[in-house]
Every structure is written in structure tokens, then in C-alpha cells.
Length: 269
Ligand SMILES: C[S@@+](CC[C@H](N)C(=O)[O-])C[C@H]1O[C@@H](n2cnc3c(N)ncnc32)[C@H](O)[C@@H]1O
Image 1 (spheres, helix red, strand yellow):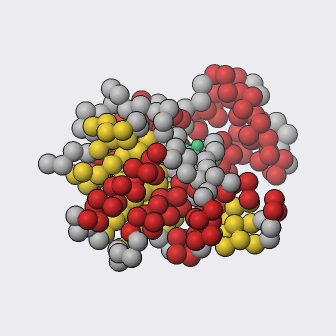
Image 2: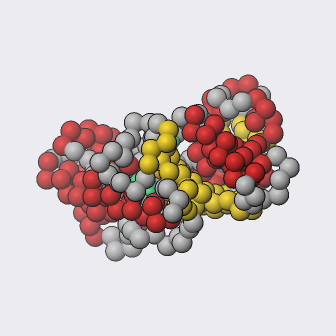
């Protein structure tokens, strides 16, 4: 791919998603769009660029972002976050709270929102609560996987046996087994396509906790700053923001206080 085509693609990707790609990602971008080019029967990246530019429906941009986004995730990723979430929910329950709102922002194929769901179900025991988990991503392809909630056995290897028995239906055995999220977890989740780089968001909040982990690493300072302002608006006073362990908010926001590695609270009052 020549430099001029690459630069135009990078600009389109940034404008439409906030994802920042630097000069050394040419090979990565070429590899990721290759499959889409084959589907379209297009051989040159310059021709693919033309398809994008001439498409008035916006459909091709969605395919481009599907191809570019990095969707690596897993159940119970950064497990200390879920231990903390369980403690928080227990505390809020003992304070009398019965309605809970959570958001997995950049939910990928669902492992994160489903882990939130299973953690909260465990914490609530027999309590009757009203719980909703909003799961959003920019990629329509990955959201379909999230909604399907079906995982091959290697994907659930870190899920405790008790959770597998309680929250998954197993089809088949051994390496070919398929694990399907049960309805008691799935019905807690509301799935939406949402572009985190376009603010303000349509939600009103207040949220008890927002998980936006391993997403902001793809954004530049301007996009991160707007996103964090929106998270602060949507969190309840005393609500929590969880980011990825490799992400730091130092220097970005003064409103939030760090209470645990990569966990921030919006102070009450
Ligand atoms: C590496 S995954 C992280 C998944 C999960 N949060 C975790 O930590 O395991 C990053 C996700 O962010 C999504 N993403 C990237 N840019 C986005 C944007 N502008 N708006 C919404 N989602 C975005 C990608 O599609 C991808 O599914």
C-alpha cells in the first residue's frame, strides 16, 4: 500500500472512530483490510479507498472499522477488578440499594459484560434487584458475537467450574464443546452500537460503574479527554470507572480519585 493511500485510510479511521494509527502500522492495516478487499473482489488498496470514498450509505466504513478494531478480550480479564466489583455490590446492597446500572464500553465479544453479570449475580445472592448492563462497541461484527454469547471451550478455560455449571449451557464435550451463556445472564445485558469518539452520548445515567478497559489505548489525548468527561457526567457520585491495567488517567482528570490500580471513583458531593 502506498503512503498516500495509507494516510487517507488513517485519517478516515480517525475521523470515524477516534482510533489513532501511527506511521508504522502499514503492514497491520494492509493485513486487516485484505479479507474485505477479497470479499469485494478488489486487488489494489487504492481501489478499496475509492470504494470507501464513493459509498454514500456508510456501510463500507462499518466494514472498515470491523476490520481494523482489535477485539482481544477474555472472561475475568484483570480479575482483581471483579473481586472489587463484588465487594462494592455487596456494600451497596447492605446500604439498601436495589437498582444497579453498569456499562461495558468497548465490550468486544461479550466476555467483559458477561463477567460483570455473573459477578453481580453471585454478589446479590437471594436479593431481588433491578440490574442492567449496557454493552456497547463500534464493531457490528463483534457485537453480533457478543449477542450470540457462544464460546468454544478454550475461551472459557479461565472461568471457574462453578460458574460454568451455573451460568453456561454446555453442548458437546472436550475441545469441541460449545458453552452458551444462559438466559439468566443474557437478559441482564442491553447491546448497542456506540462510537466512543462521538460525544455526548445519548444515555442519561447515573451509572454505578463503567468498565472501559483496553480501549482508550487506541485514542489520542483529545478523544480520551472528551470520553472521560462523558464518563464523569454519567457516573453517580460514588460511582467507579475501571480502565485497563496498562492505561493511566494521570494528568487527564482531576475529578476522579484513584482507589485501586486502574480503578477510579467519582467522589460523592
Ligand atoms: C481490545 S478490545 C477490549 C475489550 C474489553 N473491554 C476488554 O478489556 O477485554 C477493544 C474494543 O474496543 C472497541 N472500540 C475501538 N474503538 C472504538 C470506538 N471508537 N467506539 C467504541 N468501541 C470501540 C473495539 O471494537 C474492541 O472491541
